[in-house]
Amino acid sequence: MIKRENYINRVRPFIDKDVVKVFTGIRRSGKSTLLQLLQRELMADGVSEQQILTINFESMAYANRDARSVYEEIRGKSESSGGRTYLFLDEIQELDGWEKMVNSLRVDLDCDLYITGSNSKLLSGELATYLAGRYIEISVYPFSFQEVTKILAEKKEISSPDEAFARFLEYGGMPFLHENSLHAAAAHDYLKDIYNSILLKDIVARHSLRDVELFERVLGYLLANVANSFSGSSILKYLKHEKRKISLETIYNYISYAQDACLLYLVPREDVQGKRLLKFHEKIFLADHGIREAIYGHNQRDINQILENIVYLELLRRGYTVRIGKSNGKEIDFVAEKASQKIYIQVAYLIPDQTVAEREFSSLLAVRDNFPKRVLSLDRFDLSREGIIHKNLIDFLLDQDWSA
Image 1 (cartoon, rainbow, N blue to C red):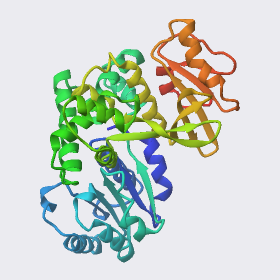
Image 2: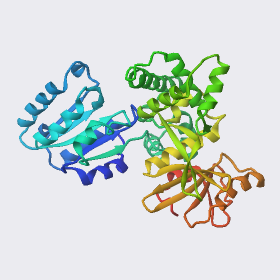
Image 3: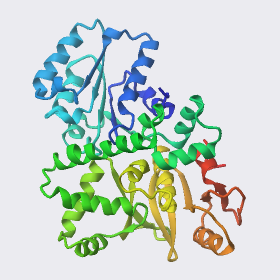
Image 4: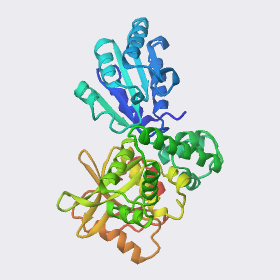
């Protein structure tokens, strides 16, 4: 079990504080494992096993339970625990009325609360109102390339970062795949099962979708076009060719549902010079590119798209807010900001000649500020120029300090 220190470090300041710790992210991204890691840390610090109470709401034991009965059960166990109770409530969105229950637990018991959910809007409704700022949300993502490299090295399954990256490119970062040595067919079956579970449980059932086949067609189009400029009209044209009708409103509803399920990200475009968001041609990114390989295939063929997706997710993991940039008519792949930090990034597969180099560097040269600017590719030579650093993408992902 890899100790995901970047997440644990974010939680530590809030342990034993009157703040609900909320972990959100796509199914099977490691949220439950994080709860286990936190429990180990608490016990190492002197908390007894009797003080720790864990409930997974995907268990059949809680399939037909109501929030009131679960509250009474937790309260009874808490009162007999012999001290402060540490509550770990996993996949809490499966319990109707969970928002009021969580707030009541916080108010009524001497407890420290940790919850997980596979919905990006877990805190957009009643709970946010009840807690009124007494929570911290931590987005959990599949393994980063750093984490994949570490676990494969510990298992002695790789001899170099390049070998690890080839595996990461195909399988993505779902923790189970790298903690267990599955062959390709089994790994793809596992990823397909995750995808189907998200579709049927987190989207189709939750939103009562009737035309499942149409929804799958829209998602299939989005998977194929990861990291490409997207517009609703492009999907309308595609479906018209497939002799299927759909409204723009329905398309954007479908995308919203997939975003809520932490499967997709819709990233807006920003005018770097004018500091304003542009209302067209967003880009779609996927929570895990391994799912794309399992469902759609062609990650190697579409490597430019996949490399962009990998960099986008890495920026999110490191706490950046990310936009697509536009400057003097030229596109910048990513404009990433965190507090007072900002970094501009161009991503390319390879830079084989001066024409490609000119294209990749010129967008960044058009930006007249002093924030770091990087061109990333899989090349092993250095084309840095005029203050813009060219770096190998694999080295960049393994680097702890991107300001260097």
